[in-house]
Image (cartoon, rainbow over all chains, first blue to last red; front, side, top):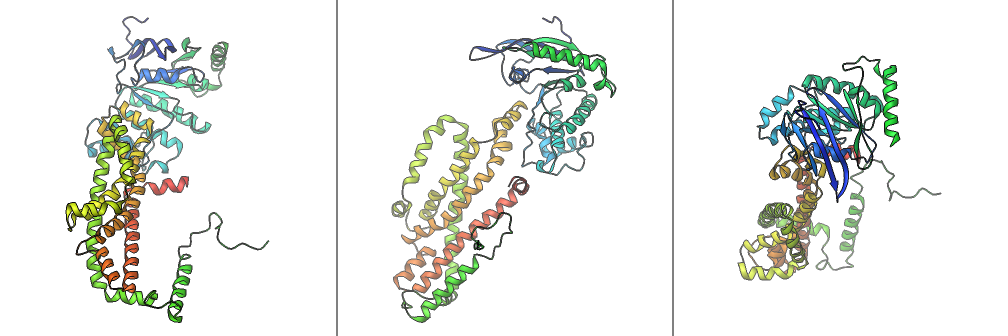
Length: 252
Length: 265
């Protein structure tokens, strides 16, 4: 257990059961301010369940979630999350999709639009404000969805396999781009993935979730620390860490 | 093999909107020839030209009756749409109400409108009120059912996303359920639109002093078959026009649909 934890966002001893069968057990994670941690595990290990608990959509059967020292267990809206499906509403323009979090908070449409429009250049969406989602490519749709997520103004973002529906080339680009955006927007990220390389490239720390019920079996501090140079994915360090993780997942 | 006629158009061939006019013209021609030849006496089946003449002769009278019928139909339709929205939202938001009201809603639809109409006249008199009521009764159901189905099949993930942003119930309807329900709403509205004209005409048959239904009764009593045909054609033209109008509103209300159907259709 963490005592006097100073991390921006952390959880302790999370347990979640469905019909009295535990899905995840004793999960503790910590995400420092501006940090990037990944949760890596095979399909069906309870990643999305844990994610629902952390985002406050579901209440855990045990354990607590904290944000900036405040207990936010079971409270939604405190941290933002984004899914693999971009969930852009087809009947709203890109700009009007992006301002949804602001509108829901009760801000005026005009003010919300002005506020969001400033971010379009940073997200590479300039000129697409008035387009409808069907006019955007997969990568652009994800960027728009991410901008919408950022408009919640929460400092912690949970990403559930956000890039897994994209083709390999677009995915690489989006990963690099996301790392930059997270830095610029000063957000901390918890990233859920089953892609070992993606986890290594992006994260400070990789947690491996494995078994039934899902438990944290390993915690890997990725070396070297971020920011890393472009050759990292072809370095020896990368290969060693990748082998270690693959073995850790495969053992169970 | 011999090339088969163009009944089954090959996929992707351009839509030729003038094609239906060929058989229509043929039918009109045969009809007129029957009339000229005298096989069927003209007083029983007037020819198209006679019908046209009757239409032109009574044009002003017909237009006056038409406006009255249109007023009844549109008022009834407007009330039906408003009520359908209110009821559908209440039913969708409350499972208990939905389960208890749905059977009653279905039951009302099994009642023949023609049988109810005389009762309405008895209760509400010969004025415009029973006509509007009958239009309301015929149009209310298709719109309500369409909306209920659409609300129930709203995208759950999108709803959850909005809830995670802290959206209230009212906002879920405003941002997700109603806009996602628009296509189903407009399908229902097209059906209701044509029902509304027919409903108004049926109500007029049973009494009143204006409307296309009243005109129909009068010309039938005087055995003016040519005028009869003229008014029947006018009623169906009016229904078609109303459906077309709904389509136009639909396109204007959902500019994004064009792209969706182009991409996936």
